[in-house]
Every structure is written in structure tokens, then in C-alpha cells.
Length: 346
Image 1: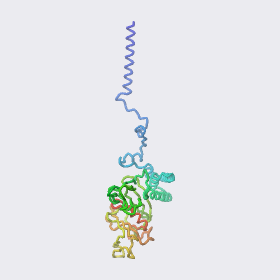
Image 2: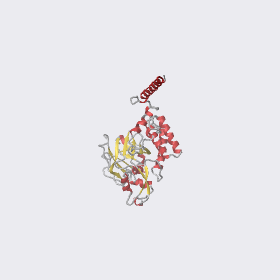
Image 3: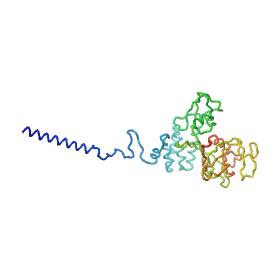
Image 4: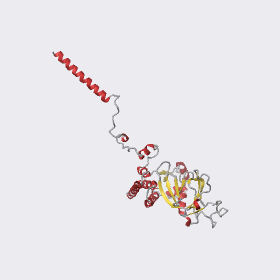
């Protein structure tokens, strides 16, 4: 009887063990379908890392090269947002500015401006604030942590402003570096001295209908930084061609000789000092080279000063882009040969 009972209990135990094994195999076996993630699939990610849901912003960040900083959320959002979002980004920028968060404010204000969806009054307010921030963050000796466009450099023996600019591939005129750091001339630097450097190039967009020129800073795929808007004079009867240009190599000059185009009533070159000299008191000239189908065959166009300030804001030139003396001086100090672009839009 005892033997029989022992056999019965043994059989029961074996049956239980077999059943448990089958259960475990069914539950955790290698052929079992993948269990659902506790998070929606588009949000699943490493523990402790918040991955944004799929959308325009997430797609932009995923495509960005690892060497390029991810586009700021406010910039990416405002670039594709309706006017309500751009207005909110503008207000965010103004609040950040009041809070002393200068680089974040500059980023938000630029994003709102470049969205193209602000009202005219909002755009004016945003440009005024962004211009003040550009002066503070880019064109002063003050250094701001977190600014992707500026850094500090310590000169070594043998350095000059020009060699440093080329070595670091800054793509900004050497005179701008001198001005930012309060240096009178390139010989004022010494080994061991630290200076603020700015990474360019700067670019310009000319709006024909508004007679405006907007300056901005952008390097590669980095965020665009609005700098300033100035007024310009343009060609009479639409003589300033729409299209893409770049600053030509060897085509930036001061006290430049002016060579009249065939359409001019003047038929000989004019030099500084001539009473009819048209390029303003310092003779600034920035020659342009066309880079698209509409401009490639164009020759002799450029940005320059003027001896007729009343023509600014009007279509009165022979085709070139005129600026008042303080404005052409600024533009000349920012645009860099070969690398700076000028886009003329309707």
C-alpha cells in the first residue's frame, strides 16, 4: 500500500513539473511573439532619456549630423508654425531677454523673425530686440557662455589677425575681430592675450518691394541669427536683378574707382574727390557675382555708398544697391569674400 501511494505521489509531482515546464516554455520561449512596450513605440527609448514623439521636430533632429548641434526647439517650431506660434515665440524671446537669458532670447527672437509669419508690428518689435542682442552678444568684447558663434582664443607667438582668421576659418573680415576686441590695429596683439572670435559668414537678403536689406549670421546648418535691417536704394525700373549672388573675390574695396555702366550719362571713370563721385565719402564698394540662372550673366553689380542719401528707399539707381554711409560701413565690415551671399527677392 505504501509503495502504491509513493508511486501515485511521484506521478503527481512529475505531472506538476511537466505542466510548469510547458507553461514556462509557452510564456518565455524563443518563439513567443515580442511583448508590447509599456510605452507607445514612437516614444520608447533608453531609460532616463526622453525621446520626443514623431513629428517635424523629431525628424529634423534625427537627420542632423552628429557633428552639428541639434536645431533649437524654439527655432524649429517657429520655422514651420502658424502666426500664433511665431507670436508666442516672440513673447518667449522678450521674456527671456528680460530674465537675462541672452543667448536663449536671441535664438527665440531670430526664430520668430525668420518664420515669416509675424504681423508687421510684431516683426518690427522682434527685429529691434534682436538687433540689440546682436550688438551685445556678437559685436562687443563681452563673452556669453553657450553662444555657438563665438569663442575665446589665446594668441601664440607669430599670430596676426589675418593669419588667425585664416587658420581658424572664421570667414569674417579681420577688421571685425579687431573692432570686437577694441584693438586699434593688428600689431596690438601679443602672445598669451585672449580675444573673442566670431564664426561667420554673415549674409544679406535684399527685399525689393520694401527697399530693405536684412543682415544675418549663419554657418553651415547652424541656427540663423538676425543682426539688423537697413534701408537701401535700388535700380530704377526694376534694374536690380532678382536672384542669388555672392561677394566676389577681390571685389571689396574702399575709395574705389567708379566705372559707369553703358546706361549712365557719365562716360568716364570717377575717383574719390570728383564732385560727381557717386560712392559716398569713403567709397565703399562690394562687388557681387551672380550664382544662379537669373544672375550668372550679370556683371558690374554691387553694394555701395552714395552721394545722394535722399535716394535711399527709392528705385533711383542704375541697378546697384545703395546704402547710407553708416550702413554700408557696417555691411562692408561683415560680408566676406567668396563665402557671404546676397539674395535679392521681390
